[in-house]
Length: 118
Image 1: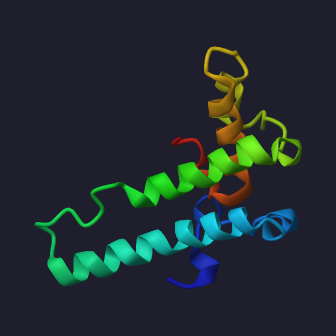
Image 2: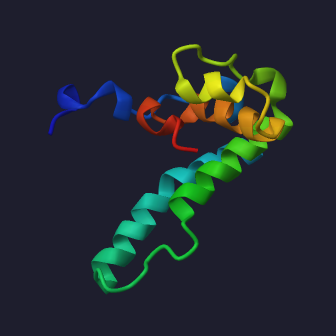
């Protein structure tokens, strides 16, 4: 598959410049991007019968980055996206505020196709 055939919903966005100015954002972003490679390498080495990601690092690294942004960079968060079902449902105020902020943070660094999954 060439880059031209990639669905825009699956493309990882380039994080905003301010994230690169924060050492913790940079550290967490790199860990998040590295997690799938580490899991794939372990799976290739150990085979499908072994849980190669027992701590769900692919998901948990995204959560850690979103939590950091939601708690340390609130003023940098994008507004709720009216086209995003999760943003719209989070606006009801029924979820803890930090979870709604984490979701909005994911819009900064996760592909549109997976942003609503957490």
